[in-house]
Length: 265
Length: 139
Image (cartoon, rainbow over all chains, first blue to last red; front, side, top):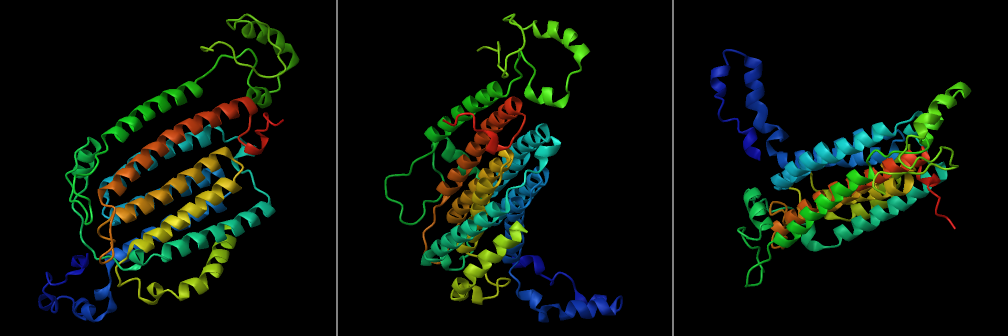
């Protein structure tokens, strides 16, 4: 990581005639504390600050559209943390699935339900105080637990990990090709073929179920949101009635509550 | 202002605890990071997610809190799996932590899809996404 700062490539003496101030600046560089900076730690602090700050901003914001935006930034910074930890495939998946997929889904949900009174539903101030106290105590509990284990507190030894995409793909089809960590019992380790199959079928079933849940339904009464959006004038009721009787059951409109008909039920 | 309260309260409650830890006596710009730094970030994300889930009345805000909680757990898995962050002589999860993190991301995507479908249905039937008004089943 400190190789980024290697200034030996530039021959400083040739620059002296051209731009003396720049040359003196470059010559003074190794004396500055910048030479000892661990850039991995600096990048970690940057991404960690972004992730934590935007996560707290999600809690603090009342506008749901801004919450979604802050969540994008927080999850993106988390992907940067994954890259810094050497899990480049997980970081890429985080960017593609979370920031590219899940959050697009969330933003669609926000936009579909963003009626003016629903954009910012404010919690009461007593709820805020209670949440702040509970969150602070939960955080102090978690941090106490994190600091209480000696094996986690030492600085990292900095072993640059091997690329993990191929071992990950092999482990997902049940073959382990990665280096076993010290203390692994003899006799081989499990692959992840079965969990991989379970998760893939789970994802398929869940997406089919979500499409079924969110499908457009035929109704015998207008949705409450439509009824709220436009109070129907009296003379249009007569023209709207034949449309309502076109429902396959042929029942007349006028239930007290909205009910679903047809659509495979 | 809620965030300010949260941040101030947590810093105030943790300051005496942190001052006794030799980790914070070193310069963070020159020392390598370890597992515990990642655990701090994971704890903050987890706490923010729990606070989001309990505080928000918008159903989509609760969903965002769940995403934050899952990400906090994922940060811990990746940190325990990383040989770069491992302290001298400490064990590491190896590749297993990364595989579990991958499964968590997949399950979070599935959960978000279903929860969003439920939220849209709730919105269609009740004309609101305020979870305090989802009380049709009360006895």
